[in-house]
Image (cartoon, rainbow over all chains, first blue to last red; front, side, top):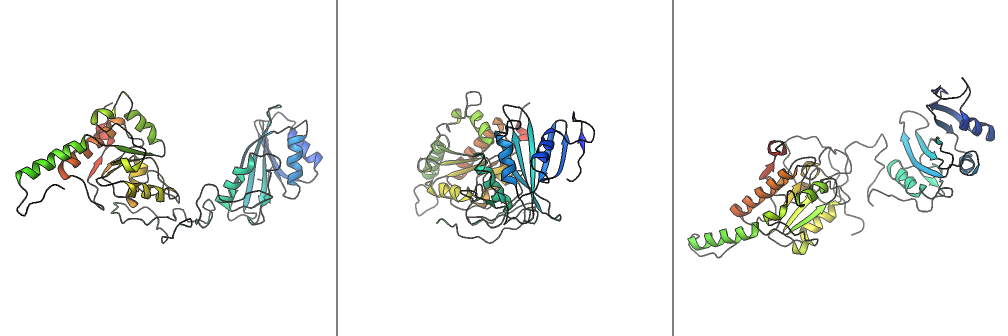
Length: 193
Length: 175
């Protein structure tokens, strides 16, 4: 989102809320958009200095975001940039939360991995890679987490066919009353056997 | 199954079949292949209140080699499918399969890349228990249906495209 509307937030009218203002002041030009509602702020930042921004968010005494709550992604297919990686952060000592979004144009280039800052981000980034194909540069073990070896494609992308399954065993012929399932791909041999 | 004489089945062999089927149906050793939320209802069925033990199908055998009833409880997805197939293949005849719950019967509310649209696409199923999750009364009714099936038809062979019994939980729940 590129609007900068602040709703129900106890800040001066028109001024960006506290954490966003802090980011804008420390890293001029990195916040491309922001919005806030009822005390929860969101900042959209550029990919270039994202590790510095996250390190600042984790270490600065005014921020102290020590809990990495979630790393996920969204596919806005017709839009350019296509993907957006969304980070949710929480500060346990200070009690505030922040959502940080990083737009990504090409999934192969991806974003920097924040595993060096929050170890918990490891599997979240692997799940993002598994479902969207977004590469996390610097991740120690970027491979599929939930899906199996031999699965081709990234199913949560908008151009992945909705019901397309890739079975590992041969499907028996079954008489179905309603044909509402999409076609299966031809059976492939499981890679590990 | 049973002794075959050159003539038509005699009274003795049919009675022998009936006795053997009777003993099989009342001593089902189940293999609870539990994956998801239906497992909670499975636990309720085998708890003290609904008590699957009174049907003889009490002891869970967590190895397919010692089991004759495969209870597939919960969602099976494509990553799990080879394992389910292998477990079913490791069971010795006679064996029966109950699809417990909507996900095992037909894929449930999942119509996506991950869930198998019913385990009958992987292994042959004898009784389907519908419900999300099915009430314990529906599960026990499915078990009784299986017992009737065992008594009438004996051990089934491999294969089977026709679902023989489906239990409708809406008709059976008494609340």
